[in-house]
Length: 199
Image (cartoon, rainbow, N blue to C red; front, side, top):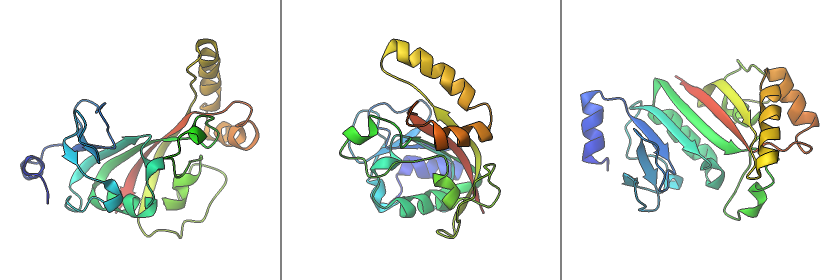
């Protein structure tokens, strides 16, 4: 059942931005959804069960950071995100790149991501040269932006990776060349995807 405060926002036409898997560090202005009742969580809900309490086309933005890799039923949740987003809504996903050396240490991770992952769920208007099949899902997104992010907890390496980040993100051709040829030499921490539902 939809919480009353959220129903009021929908009925008032307020802009609604949801952060999935926010944990205790919810970003300002977001409605936090997490399966754990942590500080800052507004709605305690396991997203593995979808977003069944949200009406169709009612949400302006859904964001998550290092959350989708923990989801078992990935396609179902993505279809739910598509369902609840408004036609001009945004889905912003920050996910670990498959070359991230720390990804494999977390036993709760169920999947990793590459430059083309969301192209399998996107319209045919990809900005990338390499094309992938798009017949896995009827719910399509239009990918507006994808950025490879490089970082390190070690200071000197972090500064070096900031230089790599600037070069790699100059254009899509360099991103594709990097992922095909250099990702294991200069591992990428995460990918930031910004997309809209195609409705």
